[in-house]
Image (cartoon, rainbow, N blue to C red; front, side, top):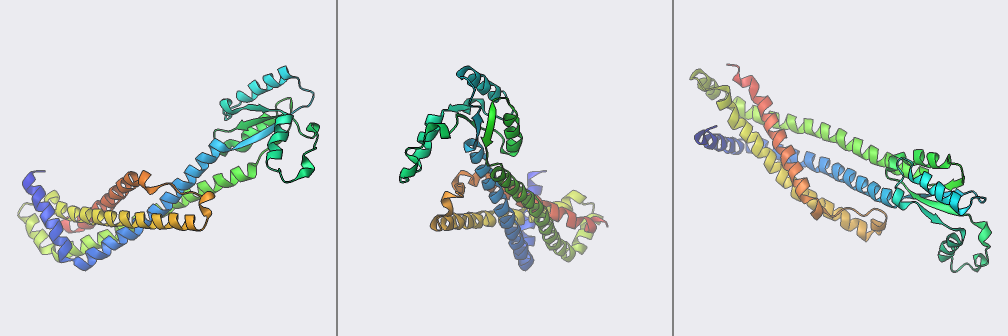
Length: 297
């Protein structure tokens, strides 16, 4: 594409935007609305996934050891547990019944009833962390099946609940992205179609004078590209403001201890890149689809 043609395409693209100001404004607003909705659900999915990753790092379950097991048998059992797929071998630790009692009493200092609790009430146990929370129940069952594991304590329902929420949010985000992208394409196509309709005679004359389809099409594609970029930039700053408002509301409402959102400053480059890419593709494709009919001269 020669520099002269590029300058002509950009000039014509901007000229068409301002000559159909109301429709262009409507197209930008629609892109902004769609990108903010898509961005909000995508950011929610990212935060849920990050929260799940943190739970995977912290989540553990306990395997209680048979009371008749000797120290050598316990060490052998620990090695067997470390060999199980999805178990983090570096985190498999032995907790004696005495240590378990001390840990328990630290959370019940004000309850004198438990101070004289005999050590025999508790059992030796292994503390085990998983690598993939989605396979939590499967891993618990594998450990439970080992000889020497008398019982276990695991919050499988909680782990499965978080995985289900993550999968649901991610699926919903993908569905909304697809629907809203289609709506944006429709709006951009109609805006470009209106511009092409008002210039249909000019397009016909250009075609009869030997203009190629590309020469006629590019100004409209540039127009859609500009609209998409404008919408993406506006949506990005509005998304930042909305995200900051939600974070502030969570902190003020005391929910931050349960669900701490990631800092937007750590994600802004990725968000801006996705918005610009999405806006540009939606704008360019919408314009490209709209102009095809008017090239058939």
